[in-house]
Length: 490
Image (cartoon, rainbow, N blue to C red; front, side, top):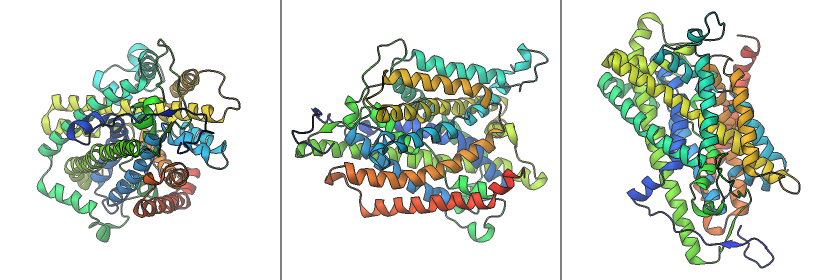
């Protein structure tokens, strides 16, 4: 990308005019972070944090703040790479030795980790409760779970949306922007009505580590601790796909995944070239990177990562903790996705409960769209594009729809497996490992592929090294203390 010599046959593109670093510019740049926000809110907040808060197990809530800083640093470096090259982080791993291994490592990791529709499994439970329509309504005597009917409907809808969209990213961005605003308003309203000042203070103290000295690991398993270190979660390096699709920097020239009824666009998984020796072009690219960084900090880190995890924790603590102290009861299994609706109904009445149930259903369901589109579909298709000898024989879109369709069909069976919380927490543990590996790889990629003006600061390098070592340590701790119990059926 940085080579502007005549020997490089790639055309030199003009850096597009960047969005302004203003409120209007940041609103215009919300798309990739709205999707990132939706994935973050999908699992940890709906499943994990209200459950932890309901138990009052606050000894390690401060891990959220550390995780937030580390993930922000990692994703910012991925945004920088994708703006400057017009390609995803995952295609960029083909620059690392062994060159054909890493793109396929990430494709297989994404399929094995995110192929289980854990978020959708929670959404269909909410849908069955919200509508009263179950599998047995249409098929009396069926031994399938009551919510399985909704699993089929939801999975078919994923394919319908992707096949009939003009551009899949455009649909995802608009859909998630609506979900983001709705979720913020509903959770904020419920929390303001249900929580007392002491509830806010207790959770704030948890974030600041005060309860660490009095509780330690009390009430928390090794899996809880590792999953906490993944909060607020989100899409990690996968944000780079949406940065490219949003047309930031060189992403303007990278092509889009179109619906099956539209002509396929030419999509490149290679680095796109621009004149890195032109000060004006460098200045424009720096502006793209700044806009990307501030959109990440404002929309995902501060609002999604800090405010929303805090509000969900406060709501869970305020409504569920007293009952837990009295009876030891806390929502379990398939009831976990319904706990925020339970809180809303208990505070505001039946109508509010139904509204929150609808919001939970949509929030969990919408997270499944980018998992199929991006984590599985685009990551695997990028691997095909950058490793196929002589180049792929068919269009990028052909392989994308082949992978997505097979993944959705597999979901019809996988949605029957285990309760959603366990699957989600195992996914969260895997995500800690992914963040660790990604932290090292983005340091190597950016050092080798970006111009001097875009190299990382020492602070960023220090944080990413910390992410690398502590992430591996957290997963090793879980594997040593809890994995043997689970393998033994404990």
